[in-house]
Length: 265
Ligand SMILES: N[C@@H](CCC(=O)N[C@@H](CSS)C(=O)NCC(=O)O)C(=O)O
Ligand SMILES: [Fe+2]
View 1 (cartoon, rainbow, N blue to C red):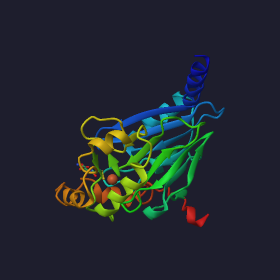
View 2: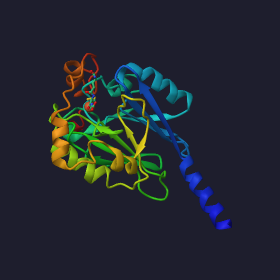
View 3: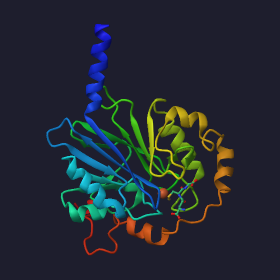
């Protein structure tokens, strides 16, 4: 009894380090995620997939919670909305923008599979999950007894709840997406929480266990998956011609401030 109580309270303490908020932008049905290590004196924080339209809301929340925003991160070059990462840098210049090297975009830090993004004593691990776009990555909270449990996977558009990202533009490939999800996401522990970049039906969170059992696309074999993806017949995102070129430069195309190119540092 004593041991159980001690173990349970110690686990709860470990989880208390992480402040987590799921935020929503309604026009593009995009989720932005705020994470911070609130046990660290600086309360360092990061935002995953902020949207330009909701940057002021997100920065107000960061301020109200007494956090120090250090990173503004994208899972991929979005096609349906303009990222807020560049705009955030114009308002909080110390923030570093992050995107994958494989996206061929500009940002302060260009990350690759296996990289770790540290904020305080917590970190995100980078997993390459191409297929929706060539440069898609999934960010997974750290593995280890001092990291939040269960782990959380921020899958961008690679894996959506009971769905997945389309594969018909931006270097998309159904074969690649199938392999990415199975090898990099479905291989995580069943209790891992899935937090996607979008939901169009009101879902907020899933788990690896749920998606391996109920995802109507990714539970099929690869040939069936490819056939499903070829027949989605989705209209192109309304903003694609504005969003993609803009997101290649952190959403700053129409502003005078340009982001720093990490490769020139
Ligand atoms: N109607 C929306 C775009 C909807 C869309 O294409 N969503 C993408 C993710 S944003 S790149 C997607 O992959 N959807 C998969 C699906 O099965 O819905 C707009 O015009 O912006
Ligand atoms: Fe996308």
